[in-house]
Length: 249
Image 1: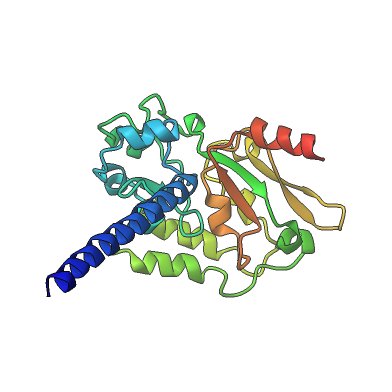
Image 2: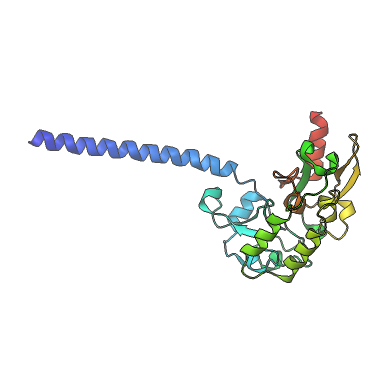
């Protein structure tokens, strides 16, 4: 009987250690995955990512003052920065508000208060990632229902701001026209410094990105293709991306 009890204790002991080892090992793998997945679009004024994660107190003040509901807080499945603010440009980009209220609301310095106007914002850089699907290049008119995504987003918000209502009205006016959405919806004061439509070799037009792009993600949000043809590379400058692209070609 004593032998049975001893064997049972040994079994529980080593089984527990084995399970703990698997959990810890899995945690290490998850941690590496989480760190790798932190390259997300942060709100205007966000400092270096490691410093941002250290400074952000997850108060949600930036989210509360955003009139476009652009800012979200990361869930558990969004990496190790749980509770930190980010922008999902597939749903709603940043509309570069005057005076940048999200920065003013940040009490910790995670959003740098030297970012005082749209031109000070440097969130990333826009890239025509999938030119083969771009409606402007293929000269395909903007289809009916393209604005359902924006309408659904507004409907999901309980306190729709008048800015969002006006945005949808402006957006609706493009239906059936040749696509210039990424250029015409660019929210910065001088959009021509960031993006314009230029003739494409295939006969249509294509968006061209300039160094005035702030990486707000609006072009990605409003792109009417099922997978956005134009996307934002977070925390990357114009020089970094386009110089590297020339080096690769």
